[in-house]
Amino acid sequence: MSELFRDELDSLARQGLMRTLQHRSDPQGRVITVDGRELINFASNDYLGLAAHPALIKAATAAMARYGLGSGGSRLLGGGTEAHRALEETLAKFKGTEAALTFSSGYAANLSTIPALAGEADEIFSDSLNHASLIDGARLSKAQVRIYRHCDAGDLDELLKTSRARRKLVITDTVFSMDGDIAPLADIHALCERHGSMLYTDDAHGTGVLGSGHGAIAHAGLPTNTPWLIQMGTLSKALGLQGGFIAGTGTLCQWLVNRARGFVYSTAQPAALAAAALQALELATDRALLEKLWLNRNHLAASLQSIGIDTKPSQSPIMPIHFPDTESALRASAVLLEAGLYAPAIRPPTVPTARLRITVSVSHTHDDMLILADTLKALR
Ligand SMILES: *Cc1c(COP(=O)(O)O)cnc(C)c1O
Image 1 (cartoon, protein in one colour):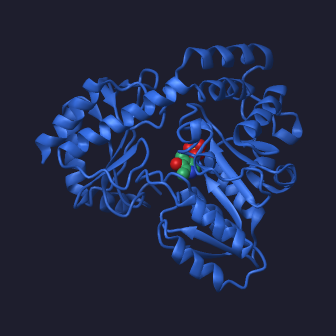
Image 2: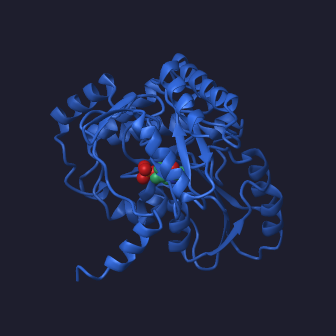
């Protein structure tokens, strides 16, 4: 049995595509200790520096004292608590919807919700660079999946025009997780309205970052309480925790309670997480925190541009640095590591071509960014 995947692994290693695990011995943050080395962290999605925030830890500790740690069952079998209900009410307010429902991860939210929205007779329209969990959710749904060119509303329009499906569902990342660009949501929203399609937005990287923290739909100035708009978000990126959620109508959430398999057949999140998330939502609308994030983001974009690195198409704290091949991306990452900077190369099949995916957070200093830019400059 141990031989079964050996050849495949060897082949991955030869192509520079082998992935291995590294381990941190301290909290997520600006500086992390990975396998014994202290490194400035340019890889985390903890944009607001909340993952180890004392207020979140305090809220979680208090909730643990009240509810215990494990939830002991699915939401339908006694796993849910008052903390879950309070979080869902607050998430709905935060996203401007009637209701919200939490899942154990963003991945589970996408995998479970998409098949509850569309089935065999239906059509899904999916951006070519959508996140893996959206692709997998669409596949599980058994709907016909039609891929439109990345962020190309014209191409989507063509596909929607020719669709004969009874039910249509357009699916897109709001902020694309690997390139940091933002989908043309106003155009896509108008197309969905015109063609009678549902719109499913994955706001994993927009929540807590765009629209005064409320996310990409707020940022685009779109109405949030339209029945055919389904907003997915995560607690796991800017909110610093773990979990996913769907925000939409009360009817939609009721339907998901009945039909979303990753909700029905999976143990509820710990109440401590829900309580910490409530606290995170409060901090995520702090104007000063958000301003600092965007100041840092724009500062880093400017420093990279000044050394001739094109950060386009990024419009967010996620900035890709592209390399001609996997080997040179790996080498760049190794040089950064040597300089005390943590930014692992992102390789196929996660992305079509290898790159460094630099993420910037509120906690980075200008010195951190200077070291990054200087090291990258010496590489060129
Ligand atoms: C991270 C991510 C997810 C999955 O969320 P988790 O909470 O990490 O499971 C889904 N969609 C996008 C776009 C993401 O970046």
